[in-house]
Length: 221
Image 1 (cartoon, rainbow, N blue to C red):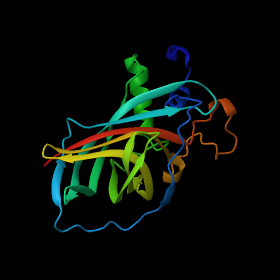
Image 2 (cartoon, rainbow, N blue to C red):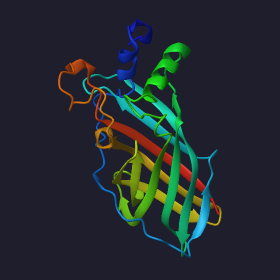
Image 3 (cartoon, rainbow, N blue to C red):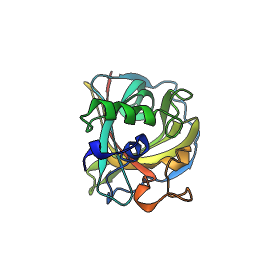
C-alpha cells in the first residue's frame, strides 16, 4: 500500500495500528494493584541508551502495519537477594517515533496525530508509567521466557494492572528484562479513535483495539 495515495490525515493515522491478522492477544487487564515496598532493595538505574521499547499497530481487517519506538525517560529496577522484585519506569510520550514511513511529511503528520487527543493526548499526559507489582518465576517454553511480570500501567492518567511473560537476568553486570511481543488493549486507557466499540466506523477503517509492545530493558547495578 502506498502512503502517498492516502488522501487525509485521518487515513494516515489509521495505519498506526496495522498488522491485521496478528495472532498476539492482549494481556489480561485488571484494576490497579498495591505496589509492595522493598525498603532494603538494591536500586539499579535503567540504562536509557541501552534499552528499547518497540511498538507495532494494525488495522483489524487488513494486512497493513506500522512499527516504531518510544523512549524510557527514567527508570529503576529493585533487586533483593539477587532477584528482581520491583521497578518503576517512566515513558516519554513525546518520543514516539514511526520507523516505516519514509516520507518525512506523512511521518510527522502521523506522529503528531498520535500525540493528539485522538490517541495519547500528550499535551495533557506527557508521560506513561509502568510500576512492577509482582515478579513470578514461571517459565513459558513456547515463548522462551522465565518470568511473569505484573505491574500497574498508567496511560492518559488511567491505571490498570497487566501481566506479561518476560525473561529476567540478574548478575554482577546488571539486570535485564526482555519481553517478546504482547498486546495491550488501548480502550482500557480511553484511547478510542476508530475502535470497534465506536458506532458508525466502517469495517475497513477500524483500528484494532490492541497495540503490541516488545521490551528490552537493561539496568546498571
